[in-house]
Length: 361
Image (cartoon, rainbow, N blue to C red; front, side, top):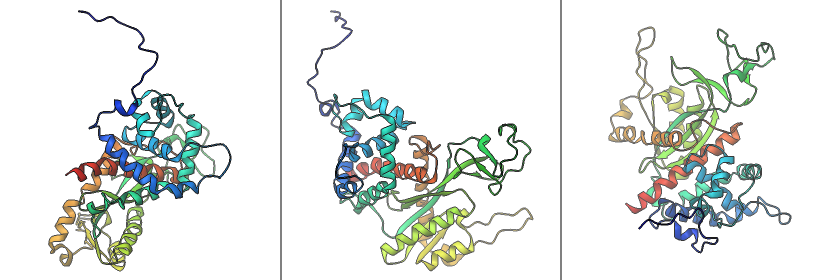
């Protein structure tokens, strides 16, 4: 028989959000990992808050909500609060009961800055990588490094001369003008830089994100954001690999693409106890000459060089996921500190999605 239509259900519900989430939902294992790491960070989080006064948003719930934003590619924190208000799955992951009120978006954003200034995201990444279930998955001597462009939250019209001239048209007509980072800057995001990905491509206001992955399973183990320029990739690689080499206390390897094939970078890596498995750049120049690579057969003849080159592509998977599903393609933050925090959240989220599958395998 036909069921009776009721426009509203019962007044009260006696089913908890825990019972509504399927037992095999992928967020269940991720939630367990997040809770374990947050419990280890309890003392560090406590130092960020005063001992008395009005209670703030619990940092555990704040960080869990920010991870949800990356998991589902929610474009703004205002929209995150809206969805957190009616989505029981989100409430369950964050730790809110169905009757709890969500936070004001402005309050949420200000508290996010507290975690950002306290370097909580970097500490979370470190504790996650040292988790008993995660540490056996990582390689401690073979790594890959790559960089990607992160489009800034600024328009081309905001890129104006630093001395203030040329603003009669409000920056709307910039065609035919020679614009450089030395003479121009964005009025809405001064930390962004005009940069082109390759010859023949359009120049965009952007930042440059850098990630280091281990070669066993392609998990991110370090990351940083810099201004977009021609040397940022190599300098960032040296900083991150130096830290990894110091922790390993022995020689490590680093797979990199041909953009890193310069004599000074290769020499700097060898000086910090890193074997550079860099792709040889032997492109033909405009004058018809073949470029000399800084990598020769002393490196390429070893089987490990080919293995590093094949594993290097896993770093691109992180950038692809972050731009397709996460919040990495075009940042909604301004300033290098905010972009760096968001970039680190994307690396953490990618690891959290991969780790339960690797542990189960």
